[in-house]
Every structure is written in C-alpha cells, then in structure tokens.
Length: 330
Image 1: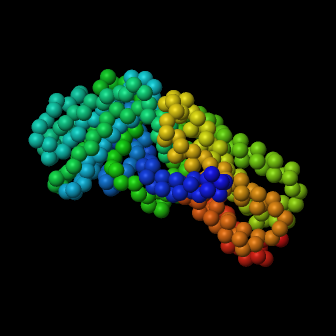
Image 2: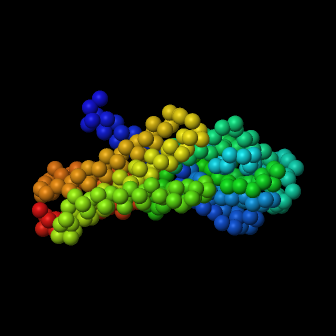
C-alpha cells in the first residue's frame, strides 16, 4: 500500500469512527438525592457521566423515554479492585418492587428493580478516550410507552471509588459539546486517577520540545506572523497524536492487545501526519500557493474532525489557509 493510499484509509477510518465511538462526556456534582438527580436532557443520546461514589453514597439520574425508544443504562469504573457499581431502576411503570438496599430513597408511586453489578475478570478497552474500564451493569430493553425513570447507582459493599454511568445509545453532539471534547478528555483521564503530568505531560513536552527545535531551524520567525501561527498550530495538532499514543499504551498495558487499538491508532496517525505537514509548510521559504492552501484546509478540517490541537490548532490552520496573500510573508 502506498503512502497516499494509507493516508486515505486512515482518513476514512477517522471520519467513520469519530461519531460512532464517542459518548458525550459530563461531570455531575451533588446528585446524591432524588431531588438533586441529574436530569438527562435526551436519554436516547449517548452520555457518559463521570461521577464518584463515596462510602455508603448513592448517585441519582432521572429521564423519560417515548414509545419505540430503548432504555439503555450501564455502569463502569476504572479501578482495578472489587468496587462494583450497581443499579436500582425505579419507575411508575414497574409493577414489582424489589427490596432495595439501605440508604436508597424510593419516591412514592415508583416500582423498583435491583440490578447488582457483576464485575468482569478483566478490563475493556475504550476506543474513543483510550482507557481501561470495568463494566459492571448493562441494561438494554425496549420501551413500549411513555416512561419516566429514576436510576440510583450504589455499591453493594459500600466501597468507594470512581463511578461511570452510561445512558443512551445514539451518538450525537451539539456544537458546544463537540468543541469541548478535547478538554473533557483531559478531565476524564484525571477522573481515572492519573496525575496531571501523565494526563497532559506528553502533550506539553511535545509542544515545548518542538518549539525549541523550530527556533533553532529558523531565526526570522518574528517577521512572519502567519508562519508563526502555522508552526504553533502544527505543534498543537502533532502533540495531540503524541498524547493519544501515550494514553493508548497505558490502556493496553492493562487490557492487553486488542483489535480496537487499530481504530484508536487513527487518532494518533492523523494528528501526527497533519501536524507534521503543517510544520513542514511553516518552515518552507516559498509562497503559499493555491495547492498548499487547499492542503491546509484539508489538514485543518481533518484535524478538527479528530479533535486534534484542542480545536485552536485546526482553527488557526484554516484561518491561515484563507488569509489574503499580503498577510502571509512570502
């Protein structure tokens, strides 16, 4: 396979995989009573709530579904111990009422179903935000009428730990949600328990190291602000690939090799290729010809789709690509 074909295959993988891999991340706070339950605005949309259970604590989530939709609820944790998040499903539509554990509040008029978590022997590899998680509950069933639900998540042995809750099954993002994903991914790795130097250290080292190397390659950067912008954007984009590669290695060290890593590899290769090419353009002495500008548009768009460069990098690349010639030093 030629380099061009390999690049095309990688691009197609990214364009197809990006909307299919991602849950919309959210970070709840203080949802420890039914009155303070997280109100899930669209429970068909795929959400990941990154929460925490302290000893004896319960977390609550509330939503409604229409006929023909599906009830999809799951729990997971990044912790490699016996912490096993479990669920009490509550709804007026539930005819039976299981005996619920102490500490869980059941509003009047709601039936209950207890679904105790089953901890798997090994962690699962997460494709979108490369990580290793233990999934303990997976509820997936059709809804035959208008239904309201209150979900209580607890730990049967009152252990404490990091709690993840998934709700919904259709991947979609609002513009604001899409633009904040790169920052949410950092917060997700911090939620896992990573030190900030691990979560963003590789990115920072790549940017700083690249900046030092670029400063030694050219001494006339100040006279070419547009090319300074390209160089900075290229570093941000390429550094994203470096950071994702490190996170992938850390996750695979726990889960073992899996075919899913091949998909994540696209989110490593694309930023490295696009960022490297943008840096190459920034270092060149020739003018930004039309074909080069088209290439910058493609690189910026693909980087934006793959969430590279914390959004700022692709935006700068796209901006330079459309700048009039008089603003770009030749």
